[in-house]
Length: 262
Image (tube, rainbow, N blue to C red; front, top):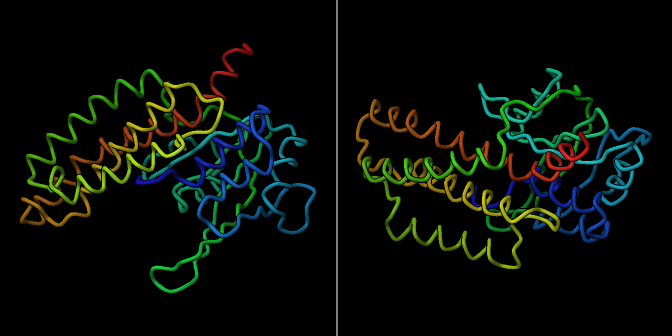
């Protein structure tokens, strides 16, 4: 979780575009990020792949008024509502965007090419039908913020207890790099999102970073397979909390609009 998921960029900047806060070109540029190009496949009314700017405009004409994020994992269909085919594709990609106002969703397929250190990524978003139903297990921003405060404390204590390099120089450098990226131009979310959503997303990414470091920085004090399995089991609810909070932050704009319409 050192950077935002592609579905997060698409939903955040797509929502800003739908709200009239950014231009189509600016939204597309932010969504593509460091990738080479994004295309959309299977869009109703189009027989071939289309560019991202055209696709965003077409979504609006199809009745889409908001975009939600799903970040599913095995056994946790976070943000999904079905049907099974869409859920399976989203689970394989570990992310998806679900449209609000039209029964369609988008799942990214990433194509990478180039030598190590100079890899170029092209993304094709596959449009598929979705079931119009409440997304699974998505908390409110307030719930996510409370859960994150506990998760950050638990993750820090766990890293120390397991002798994982969660506070060493390598971990600190990684966290500093994350902070620098988050602060640069406040790129964490798109225009229109409330400050609380930005705060929740930043904290969720920090908790996710600690979990990633725990998994990647060697075995630490876990010297046996049973101890490593115990570490993974202990970290699982922390990682789950971080993913739930990310989804809550990205989806907050749509959720607020939906509540206001009731």
